[in-house]
Length: 478
Image 1 (tube, helix red, strand yellow):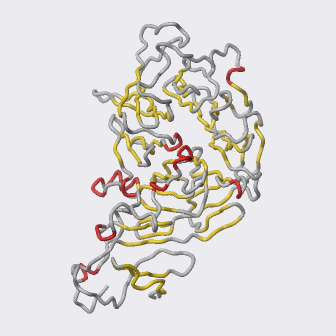
Image 2 (cartoon, one colour; image 1 turned 90 degrees about the horizontal axis):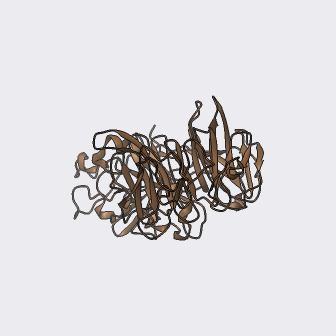
Image 3 (cartoon, one colour; image 1 turned 135 degrees about the vertical axis):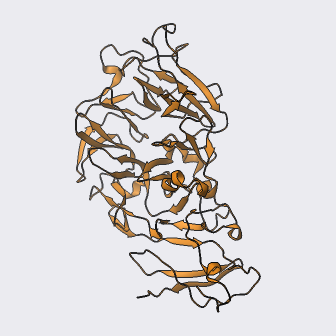
C-alpha cells in the first residue's frame, strides 16, 4: 500500500490477524494482529472462508429437532451413529437411512450418550427416564438387569472413571457403581455418594486426568455446579457401594477447587488431549483447566462484544437456554455453539485455534467468529476406525430432522434442511493510523491477499467517525 509515498511501507502494511478477533476492545485500541471481526472466516496462511457442511439424509425424518447424538464404537471394528429425536432412538447410516432402535424414551427430552469401554455399551440419559443401555443389538433399561440395585432414574449425566460409572441423579448428587457393572449403585450413601459443599445441584460431570505432586497421573472427574467446580479423585472407589460403611482401602474424595466458576451447560465440557478441560461458565465466559492444575483460567473475554449493535458475542447467548451450548475439539479447533435471542438451538459459533494456543502462548487465546448460517443442537466427533468427521444434528425443528457433517473440506455452502446456502464472510481489520494518527490521508490503492471461492468480494473503508466508502468492488490482479 502506498499513500503518495509519504507513508513508509512498514507503516502502511496491515499485519495478518494472527491474534484473532477482539470484540471487547474499542476499535481504536485494537492492536496489530487483532481483528474486529472474522465472521465465517479464519486465519490460516491467509484469511480463508470457513468450510461448509453436507447432509447425510436427503429428506427430513420429521418436524422435530435432534435431541442428542453420538457415534457408538463397539467390538473389534463395529460402529453405529445414534441420534435421538421426538420419542425415538435411531441409527443413521452414512447414506442417511434411519433404523429405529427404540421408542421407549419420553418425547422431546435433551438426550446424552456415554460409551463405557468396560461393558462395551453406550448409556443413555435424558433427565426424565430410567438409565438405558445399548450394546448394538439390545436396548433396555439398566434396572431390568438381574440383581439391579438402586439404579438412578432421571439421570442428568453419566461418565466413566476407572472401573466405575458416576451419575448425576435427579436429586443433584453423584452416585457411583460397583466395579465394572452398571446395575449396582450407591443410593444416598454416607460415604459412596458425592455431595456438593455449596448449595445447589451438580450440573456437569466430565472425566479429567489428574496429576499428583510426584507427577503420577490418576483418572478422575470434574463435577460442576452452576457457579462452582469440584475435583473427584481416588484409586479405590470401594468394593461394595451398597455397604453401610466404607470398606478398607477406599480412598475416593471430592474437593471444591473453585467456588465461583462452574457451568450450566453440561455439553460445553470438552477435553483437548494433552492440554486440559474447557467449559462455559454460567456468566458466559470460557474457562480452561490445564492438566495437573486445580485453578481454572478465563479465556473468553475477547469474544464478549461491547458493541452488540454491530457484533454479537458470547454475551448475547440466550440465558434461558444455557444447557443448549455445546463445545467440542476437532481438527485442532475448540469449537463452540450457542443460541441467541429466543433461539433454543445454537445459531452462532466461535472457535479457538488450538495450534496457536499450544505453540504460541504469547498470542493469548486466538478466536475467530462469530460464525453463522447453520443451526445445531448437539455435535459430536467421529474419529475412530479411520474416520474423521464433526457431525451435528439440526436444532431448528422447522427445518426438520437432519444430520450434517460440518467443516467439510472444499465445501463452501451450508446444508440447512434441504437447502445449500452460500457462505458470506466478513473480515474487519483493526483501525490503522499508518504511523501518523493526526494526519489526513488519501488512500490511492489497496492490495490484499484473499481466499474466496464464491461470490464477488467487496471492500468498505471506515474511520473512527464511521463509514468512508462502502461496498467497493475489488479487481483481481492477474
